[in-house]
Image (cartoon, rainbow, N blue to C red; front, side, top):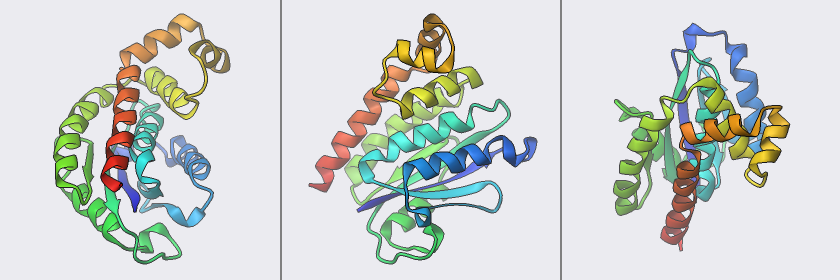
Length: 201
């Protein structure tokens, strides 16, 4: 099974694409070495295929990367399922993961993150949590988002090391992570990985 994240940029017309697009491409390139597994299309939409257990972590990385700009946001759906056909691009591939991602994306209304998998009980449990994740992450400011993004992609680093890398005071980093509920987000990311792995086995 695979996870397919479908998303689009909210208020993309308010900023030039170069503000966020190149950074997103770079992140996708480091997330998967297979260029057929991600695509940015229609100017402000994207899709990426990732390992199932990493799906929520990747979604939060995308969220914090995009929210590093104050004028835009992002909404995303995570679809989990099989991949029955691999196309030259992720948007040309097909399977239940792609269908679930597309169908759940169409249901996004008041929240910015949703999931659909073959496991109904898992979806009901986690979509309730994701509503809260959306509520918190939607209010991230650029400085908080930047710190959270760097911390998520460098989870092995200690806070003082992050402060040094970002050339900021350790107290500033600590406050930013607390404002963004980073520790709580990590707990949810790890819980997601644990629960979905259990469903798959």
